[in-house]
Length: 82
Image (cartoon, rainbow, N blue to C red; front, side, top):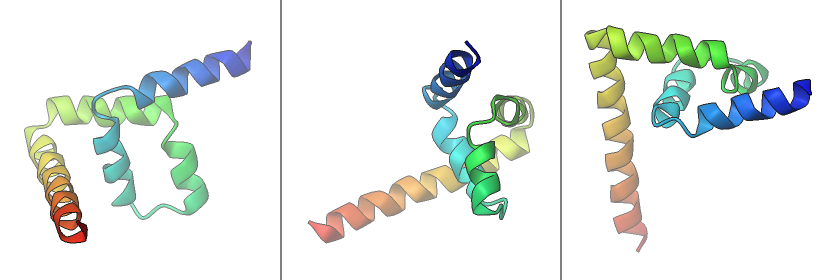
């Protein structure tokens, strides 16, 4: 039963529209590989990130700026590689 709840929790986080932003935010935190793997599936960490993203306009703008740069870079790389 616990395993099913854990799987449901992980899946519900991964389908949230903020999940890609959350992963990029975690990459900037300089975590060890093991800590990164655990935190990326942590519902409480994700909720903390989501609350901060929704309530702190400065944090919101910083994260959007970082994510837009990554999207832009990916598009440029796709064009160059084609």
